[in-house]
Image (tube, rainbow, N blue to C red; front, side, top):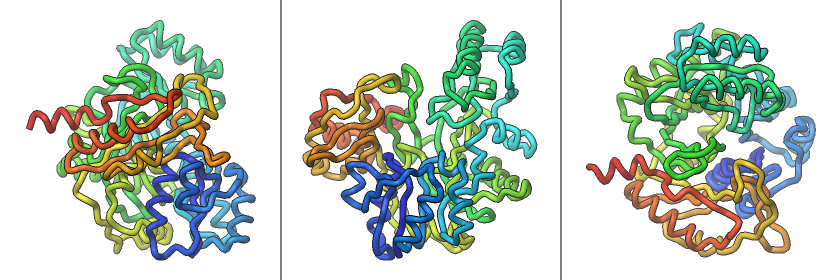
Length: 426
């Protein structure tokens, strides 16, 4: 079978790396891919916002299955278009992808089906939002309703900050994603990520992870798309996973079916583990980036059959095996990220880093030009390591990073700190 992966980030490199091990795949393609993906797949220059161009490519190359990586093509209906063309694919249709495409849609679903989440209100103008804020306690969370590349969430510490944030979002800070906003209570606890596959009826739990959103050590500075992650997340023990499935995941899958837009694909729940139990922060309708990197590093099964079972409704009979060792990924980003940053800087030492035991360097924002690897994005590399403990994986990842020669890049120095602290205390 010929398989196409859509996307160009670290998530897609991880997926291609995992899928390249499948003996069921004849040719693996990635559109558009990046400088690292071309080591494991055939990269093709396609505009992934052009659904018909992707269909034509699939027909030309006799693609039997498409794995859609990023959220934007899913929200834009790529799976719907592929369905109409008779091409099997992994990911939700547009109506179901609204779980990520509209935070208001997700929050309303939680309200209507009693799924635990933060209290909230929705606003489409600055005046009514500010009136609401005058009677709220702080800090408070203000979110752009639409897709904002993981950056559309701002925590305001006081009324003045909150009012300024409202003006900035409605003033175009996040473009069209900020045409509507959600204001919600600030939840306290420990964050975790939980992933399941679902065919619209059945669910297959995957694994837990913990992301590091803030740009700086000690979880300081502005939020990013993610500066690192590790799996499993110790806070998500068996009891917490069971509670999450029963109170959040299963009700969501049932609610989407009840709404007439059954959800198929990977369902990524961003959770806050509070004193009252797990509460939903947000849903993503695709694998996390960088969480996908650590999930693929821990997976001990052929990924393709599970993705296909999700698409064709046979997930109930699917089993996945996982390696017991934890995995950790450290993101290397371009200086200045998440603000403005310089592109096309050369990265050296990647072969030496990849030679580090139990390490693979997964590319996110790179291109290969004249046999050189150049940076093209904000988050550029995901140095991914496995180990007998999170501490071991962390040591291996930073050992590999020390071999990378990229003066214009930086990374956090404390990825995995919560798990390492727990291991030291045990």
